[in-house]
Image (cartoon, rainbow, N blue to C red; front, side, top):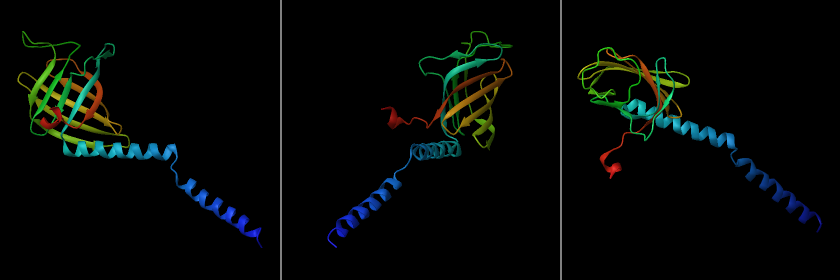
Length: 174
């Protein structure tokens, strides 16, 4: 009888410890949770229609991929006012004299359409700037990566690769 108690106690402790190990999450489960959380954050940004696109690469039509430095090129999308400052590499048809050569505009987006696919969102909008009209198509992936295609009346098409983020507010800048 005395030898059965310690053996029974050891067996009981082993079964309890297996239950603890079974509750630990695997790397796949942790990655899946992280991906799902990131997807929800992107979905929230898209639903609010307020986000910033930061360009990291430019891909002009008929040209090579160009890496952009300093993270200073952006598209700030908002339903009231969209602001853009992106470099342009390509063919210009009717560019105003003395222009800086980049795609810079401010305006209110029109005809905003959002589609959700299995792997991404596609956002389409038209913005009329001071000298031109721009058709924007933004493909946003669930991990935050994005591709922006810009078509205008006075320039050849160009696309940019980058990321979207929540817009910076006055408090977060200080």
